[in-house]
Structure formats: C-alpha cells, structure tokens
Image 1 (spheres, one colour):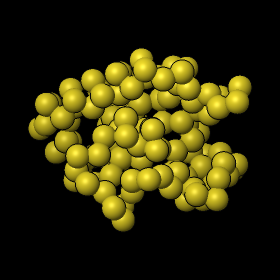
Image 2: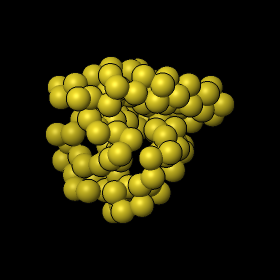
Image 3: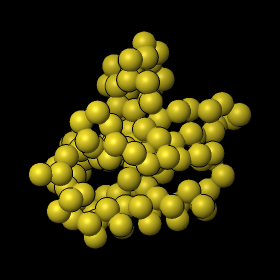
Image 4: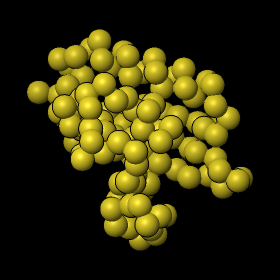
Length: 114
C-alpha cells in the first residue's frame, strides 16, 4: 500500500511544510506536485544557485516515512554528475539525511534545505 493513501495526515503535513519553506526562501523558483511512473509522489523543484537553475525532483518512496525520501536530478537518465556527493550520474544526491541516519520525522522540506 502506498503511504499517502494510509497516512493522509502525513501527506498534508509534508505539503504544508514544503509550501511554507518555498514561500520563505528565494532559492526555489518553482515547484510542481505529481506522481512518477511507479505511483510515488514526487515534487519537481527548480533550485537557483548563482543564477544557475538545478532541476531536481524530491521523490517519496512507497514506504515513506519509514524509508527515506530522496532528491535527484529531474532527468534520471542524465550522464552528468553534479557532485561527488551523488550516487552515480543522474542518481540521488547524498544529503544530510539518508538511509544511514533516517528518522521518520524528517520531511521533504528538511531534505531540500540540506
């Protein structure tokens, strides 16, 4: 079962936290909510750093919040590696929160800030 069907309260919390954070910062240009091909919730975000737009997606896995959400370049087929802190070209970014230290109270907004 997909987490957002069983835990509507958490979905509402995630959305509220993200919307509040996006409204409070100037480094996010746009965001769009949707589903990926595996019916996982994703949020497409345009992050602006030094006038460069980084198109990323925040993906909530089916077992969220018991498993970590992740952020990756929007085109997972890309061959460009953005950082040494990335799991392969086009892979998810290694952020402050991940599989090794995940806690269920960590939100997507917290991931984007990290």
